[in-house]
Amino acid sequence: MHWMEFTLAVIDKITWPGIVLIALLILHKPLQALLPSTQSVKYKDFELNFSQQLEKISEQASTDLPPLPPIDKLTLTKNAQFLPNQSILQAWVKVDKSAEQLLLKHLPNIHIHQEQRYKFIGQSLLSHHLITNKQAKLFNELRQLRNKVAHAPDYEVNTVLALQYIDLCFALIEAFETHSSIKSVAG
Image (cartoon, helix red, strand yellow):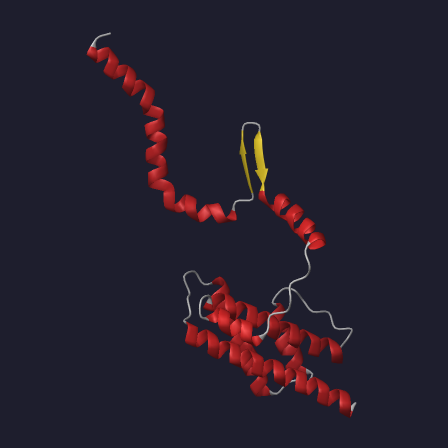
């Protein structure tokens, strides 16, 4: 085999892998953006469906593992030092549950719309005089900050802001619980 034939043979063998490699290098950022939203992967006879696997694992875990203990303020405060965004989301879950309990306690037949759920709960609490205007404003502002943390790309808060957020959340939860117990005693 002459050196020219050898060179052409090598070029022939590495052309397609080289093109694929170059395409991956060029498209690596868009591919990285798509990867988290990937539901399934299929190649020839191999298929992997992430959502079905996750459902199966979750179902098995729910029967095999004890339920997680509720997260308290101290735990959230400790977590805020390392995961401030996650702590904000967890604190909001507690506000949401408390607000929902208050609303359902006084309006048991109300249907809570899942579309714009938080906005609906806040407006319903205010319109039925279950919270004050200041509490409604705080609820709305906490909701908006939660939405930024949850949905805005690259939105990061620092530990100090997370701790302030957690304090405000628990103050609002206490106000909901106080209002609920006052109404129960008065009613």
